[in-house]
Length: 161
Image (cartoon, rainbow, N blue to C red):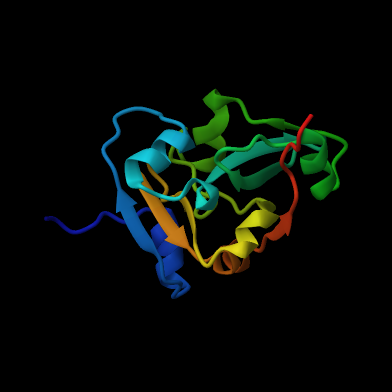
């Protein structure tokens, strides 16, 4: 087997001497996080998706939430002290982050945006996040992720409506 081609996310973890595991899976098109977890065998409750949003101020924010959950836009806005936030349009993902839909990692975007990780991540020794390309998942300790992205924990998911 050839040498693993590193993504920006992996290079940042290497540079910061943060241990991580790489899980590659076959995938030719965008699939959601639940299907990714199914393919990789990752526990659903430890698998997180990366959402990029824009606030009323035009500032971009990154939210890392459990794959089976939906973001609560009001809670997300409050967590970053914005009046409101909205999802980044799919057509803008690559221009803003440098990543493609389905391969967007909270690590290694074009710019480091303020990052909120859902508080449930704190209860795990490792979480599964995008490795920076479709077909690659990485595991990382949530506190290590927070330290690199200079993020913080908050409750930003929808609860029984």
